[in-house]
Length: 162
Image (cartoon, rainbow, N blue to C red; front, side):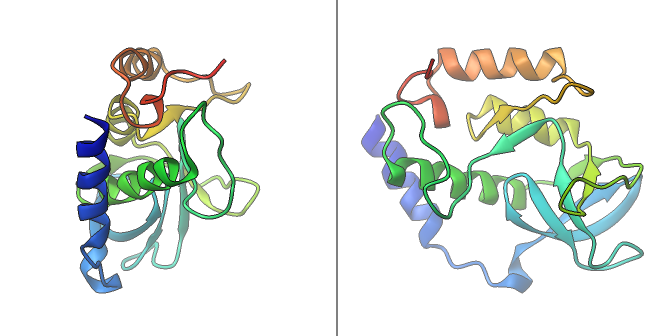
């Protein structure tokens, strides 16, 4: 099963995505906006009234695809890289609905809440629920994470680290 997962992931990564081909439609506060996902939990708005806005998606965190940022149980760096890339591709291939009051994070990115994307990313094991003291993870996100862990999906394929 692991070999099939790695083969599928490598196939998905082999398909080149030119910047112009990677536009994803995201509804932001009810308005359609084409965006470019640079990873699974952030994107940049390409056109419209928010063009150029960098966005961080709240409630979940995906793995980084650069540097030794994540260590996850017994998973190899390569496996974590593949999961990070799959999260980005998954984000790019959907149509998502998000809301924001346009407050920013410490990096100046607008914080957006995309509940359908958050739950889907976590359920597939491409992300984990992320909480901060003022904004705990929604119960449905924690349920999705427990199911992904139980079924050893994505980042949980090697088990759940302590």
